[in-house]
Length: 348
Length: 101
Image (tube, rainbow over all chains, first blue to last red; front, side, top):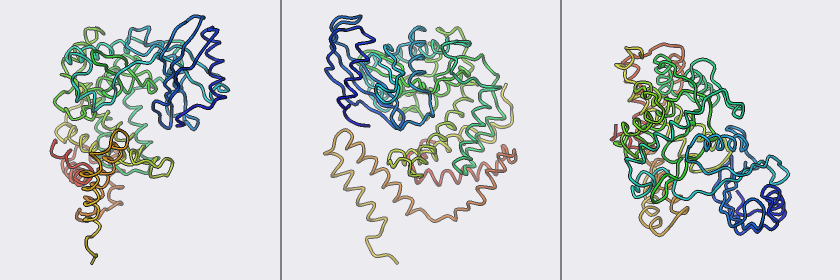
């Protein structure tokens, strides 16, 4: 992504800010690239506003689609609406402020949200236990945050863009992963084994709720004393609540602390307790175990897809290349969870 | 017969220089990239050194298709073969993941 925004774009951004904040004087104190990928860009935006609805200095994040963005996940508009729904449901998120759907301003739609401080990087969040306050309290809070996400249920006219599963949500995912493997011409018998195990051991279907689908260590931010926000809402869909618990607890997201089964952060039961207290729902332990197998299958397929972006020459990247080679260890994890003795009995 | 130091030895030496001499003086993004390169070189070196097992693509294709059709599910024999193949690949890509299992 570019490190700076050209003058003409900044002028159009100023005009947009004047319109939404009604400020009579706006100064852009800072506008710098924070991070970004092939799909979206994040810019740190600090402004000084005089008059209007929000006078004073503000530290914001401007999040926009990359110019070359391919629509594989939700767009910025949908993400903005989800953040608003999340905040209303009491989830710790960066407050969404302004949405601009007009592509003539910055080339693609974008939105502005409050800038939250802290560290999100998975390995760092797991390793540096000085972050986020007491780990047991944090683990329970993460359970409560997830429960609040799952308190959002269909039908919701504002969330009408979300995908809804026909039939069993796991079966839909299994069919999808098979199609992705076929599209890549990947022959992965170990993944086929895992997918077959899942298809034969589907858990009882739960109610349909909003699922985040990437709720894990690495996608929430911690400062020195607390959780400052749940991030990355672009994979949300209607689905099975236990799938998010499985993704969070899956061994592949524990970043070197396999003993701390709740995301490398704390004890699994502490996380479940926070979730159960907030949701009033009982965690179906067996179903979560099933979704942990699904989590490794999903991550393996995504890793292969990322590797293929490099192989196919779409995006030369050592990081993508190495991610592709992570598939083998995920296959091993799948096999370890589905030995022959776990095939005999169908799931209750 | 290859001249010495051969490809494996050259890769191993590149990796050592990167890890021991360059990476410690680097920071941030540059350090992250240096460690990624060291990781990739390690993998490439192990792949070159691994005994060449006849990679039978046709057999893998048959097995994948059979499992997709619903054959061999839960079979101890199939499982052992899968495990052998995956462990061989993990020994190259991330040997640390083997010890954990």
